[in-house]
Amino acid sequence: MDREKLTILVVDDTSENIDLLNNILHDTYRVKAAINGMQALKILEKDPTIDMILLDIMMPGMDGYEVCKRVKADPKLSNIPVIFVTALSEQEDEQKGLDLGAVDYITKPINPAIALSRIKTHLALHNQTRELEKLVEIRTKELKESRLSIIRQLGRAAEFRDNETGLHVIRMSHYTHLIAKSIVGEENEWSELLFQASVMHDIGKIGIPDSILLKPSKLDANEWELMKKHSEFGAAIIGEHDSKLLQMAKEIALTHHEKWDGSGYPLGLSGSDIPLSGRVVAIADVFDALTTKRPYKEAWEVEKAIDFINRNRSKHFDPTVVEHFHKVLPEMLKIKEKFAE
Image 1 (cartoon, helix red, strand yellow):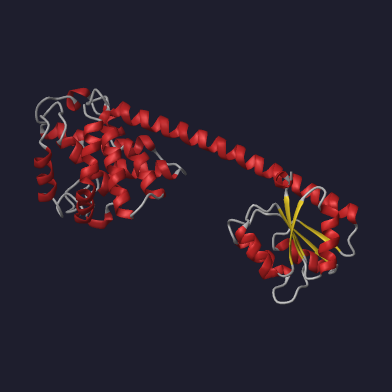
Image 2 (image 1 turned 90 degrees about the horizontal axis):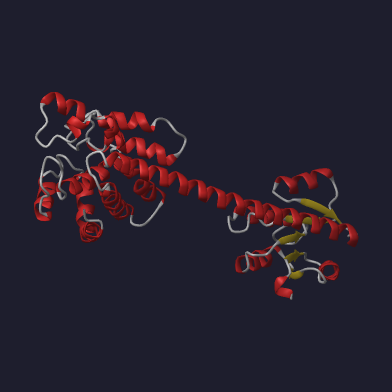
């Protein structure tokens, strides 16, 4: 049954005080004890699931204030409620403890009934807070998943205009993800955002007439100028948002047709002035466009597409991104096969 009890760590350099608190608590809680600050931190390092700390202030070596400061600075421990149990009773002493993050202040000599009541109250509040945090986390996850689903469907909706399966956005987003993870060395927030946001890269095609988008032959100069507007249309459709995901989606929509040598559109950016997200999506997008059938062209062989990318290194494409493209090319080909038209 002890394992089902909440655990309280009592920190005091006087054994009599530890015994007193143990007698008050042991029927209801599991009690651990430390006789100084360093010992308390070692116990917490081994068992960060402790539910509350009862902390003396006046201890040799490291006082209670310093212990509390270190606990609150550690992300694994910072949510543990701390109650100071001390003979110090001046208002400024209490205020200092509360400013460091303690939830309450019990003065010695200890009144068992009052101490037990305060401990129960703060544990109840702490448990309630944890339950609310879990509910918020669940709800936030649901909202995030709903938002991502809508973004994916909007991305596919744009692709259905000139790609009846809509698989282009799936393939190129996975290509983008592989290249991004290679660049950063592992999965992180940026590579995950890029994976999710890249599906919106051509959302601006919604604003391009079918007569241009589905034309089976080469576009004339006026048609091409309108076709190039889809980058700006996409940025305008996505708009301004506080969301990092939508901010990146807008950045990608606007810049994925920029070229390393400055000859791209719509802004004529060059080199590192082009956001890295746009540079990564550029190569993923072109590789998929070249290797799949479009209304105006047949699919290229993979070797021919790779040769095109190599020849346009430092012209169209960031040379460093090309290096990472080659590193993940075997995985990209697996994606290509998995999501074939």
